[in-house]
View 1 (tube, one colour):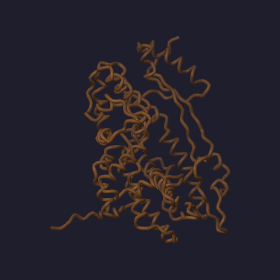
View 2 (cartoon, one colour):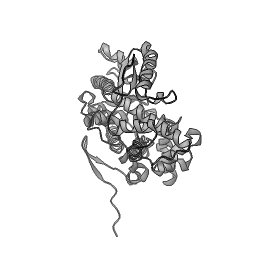
View 3 (cartoon, rainbow, N blue to C red):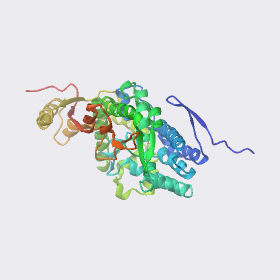
Length: 412
């Protein structure tokens, strides 16, 4: 009897062929926890703006693993010692770094799950898998947690120039069609090196880093922080909050068992047990979409109106306004909304709300992107660059907005 061949080759539209280098990685990819990522979109509700943005977190995770393989190959060629155990641990950590994302992750994190970030859930999944795989993920977990003594290995997983960003910028740009976000990840990886245990970029790669930072800024404004996408995500967050409120008040809502569990229970970091993790592993985009399709016909006016807005893409207006006008505009639009749709005071915050967008392509408070010069000097990329506008990318830019239903009659 022949054993199963686990050293597979996958075809990716971005990079071509991606290899699965070890049987452990194959088994992790085949695991139901990881396969769930096939059913979760990478860019959430962005497909309401960019119809091509239908790719999944499964795609992204495999792409990150491929980028990590290239990085290990380049560093070894430059005589950076990486053991076989460290190599496999890097692949595991980057493969599983997003496994804790729920459906429409950011909307989930601010509605039916409280005070727990997807990275913390990723770690819980990794620890559960480590138990199942008899401790074979222990080194990967140490690197993922930032506890491993070799700093550059941690930086490959999580930094301002990590393999996660290398893939998602290129992949999201490709699928959304926003060409401004495309980066030369292949050249960036060819230019990385290690100096004093810190990940650096060789001097001749400085222009690729400049392009990377500019592309990141543009992708945030055009995709991740696109006002319509953000408005839709906030709308979904409001829907889930309303559904949870109704459920806790004894209203029976039609939803999958997985989603119903989170509507009926208060879930936070403090009580996120293994049983809750198992329920979370059953939750994906299909649960939320199916619920929205049912809830648009519910007799609760708030739930049905908001659900229909997502399902039928009758999204709210999103108006950018100066910060000092937010409070006044909110009160004005709440008044108009109550008079137009006959909404009471307790429900108006579901229909008119505001928030702010923050875009900062380079964070001066985080580990810097270091340029390694030919004279062995190391400098921050902002100092190495002759682009004066690059320094502006380190300054956070805020935009303020309000959301309200279309067709609002402005009653005097």
